[in-house]
Image (cartoon, rainbow, N blue to C red; front, side, top):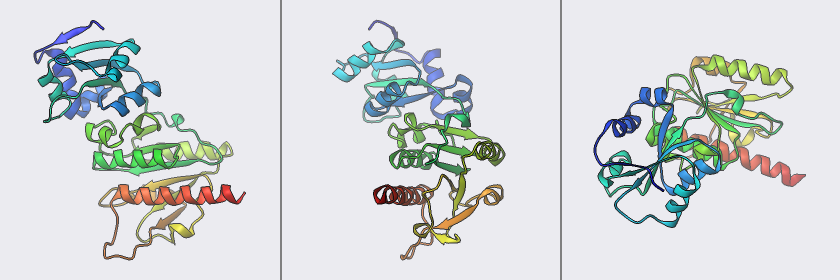
Length: 276
């Protein structure tokens, strides 16, 4: 398990530290930091390229960490615990292991489209935690992938990565500059015989989500937390649905709304399968 040791804030440490807050550095280096047993395990299980494993040099490692470090052919770096805690953004002590993981390409072709397709699109999200929560819900309810469009918070921001609790590694997540690229991708899929319906969400939807057929191939479009869907996306929506509410709240947080619609979609599809 021999490897490099880092005990000072050297150039390599600074390079990894920049991944925490600097989106441009993440993009340039094409990598991000991951912590936690489940997320790191899922990254490995789903074949993501782990560029380095950083571990606490000051304590005996758990069996999980020992097996991880032995099982992957990658750079292993023993770090001083205070430096590891800084990279883990922890005040309660260092994480046992941190992984430096290579990003996957932003290619819409990574999202499989088929007769039971369920995709999610998040338009111009401002909160990385909301992106992470939607990734987690999309994975939980069997979606095929998530697209994040427009000028948005970063999928690979540490807050987003943590909020996914590992689902980022199981679900294709693709960043797209605008609705134009997604419209082209949809046009190709439709021309190939996959009739994807774009269903937007809005409190003034034309129908309540539980009265709308979501068993067809759908791309669910979720709008920005404050302003909702952009004009470009509203134009691309074939239908817009609302979530019926009876309390005093006029709307739901974007990730909660996405979860509610994903649950309803999964419920309808399960009922259809059971009906035969």
